[in-house]
Image (tube, rainbow, N blue to C red; front, side, top):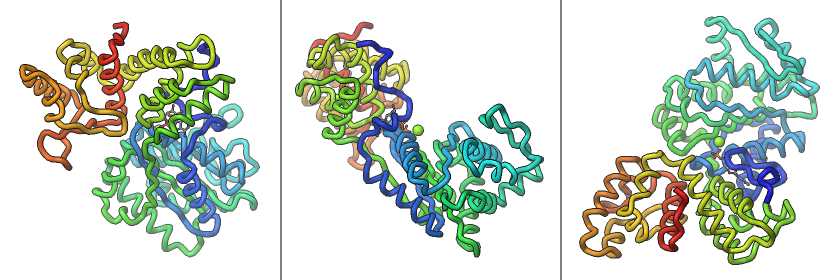
Length: 401
Ligand SMILES: Nc1ncnc2c1ncn2[C@@H]1O[C@H](COP(=O)(O)OP(=O)(O)O)[C@@H](O)[C@H]1O
Ligand SMILES: [Mg+2]
């Protein structure tokens, strides 16, 4: 099929019309925003592995909130921001920018007055300039700024919903953790209600890092956790996407693609895209799905794994071990003994070399919950990749490299 017409979007947030599943988590977010409109400040933390769909979910929830006019919204991408000043600046600028086509835009601009250095054509680029003293003041008065912005919205937008996405780097800063705590406290004790929802987005270790820096934050967040898709959800994903371009999939091919996805949305898009390209006519058949899978695994390897891991997995010795890897999607863990039992006695040394190498490269780690000789993939995508490679070896599918 024509690659230009592929409905799949590897690496980009999901299209609104093609957003799959997650109804429970969406409901929780929109519920928080409704509650904030009824006078209660809300703060939640959306967690989950890379590629599980956090940004997509936040952006879908934001779309619903805008559609239902529950709140004015902003989605701030904070990847790479690693200072409190940078955070405050980026957030305020994005807030202004995201509301540039709204009736209340001028009201918000007025708050910042002379500090607005440049408003680009159509308001799409905004540059706030603060002196260091002002910056301190704005940082301390952040709750006040949110309250002021919220009070200048239209009457039919009772609250403000701000997504603070990708806060992984920030969450390692003690000053950010402390600032967050005092901001939440300041909002809590203020007389005027703050009709604001903050949705923080990051990895689970990010949330833990914030809490270890500032333990009282543990009680503050509503935690919304995204887990891997079930087999059913994966099947629904592929059916929805192929149907959207008037395509269909044979049941065996559908089941195979869903299994190979291992529940990770980012992998689903990569497989879907590759199968779409490999298919000459509908319905998609098992042979198309298999051909697609091989190129998808290659792309995934390059995108998600360090080159040294991909390289190492090409060696004959390791491919023999891969053949025996007793893992599958959704498992994420395995034992050394399970490998040893399946291989001839002379392979024991290669197994240990393999495990050592993969540990050194960061693909696997010892599983602290299950004791010695138990391993866990450090990222679910690796689990899926190893399984795909293992499947390819078992079935004699050699990749092109
Ligand atoms: N609910 C969903 N429906 C369809 N595709 C999704 C969904 N959630 C995520 N995806 C896709 O998965 C990939 C990773 O999603 P993303 O939101 O960027 O994850 P994260 O922010 O957790 O790293 C993207 O290609 C995105 O389009
Ligand atoms: Mg993201």
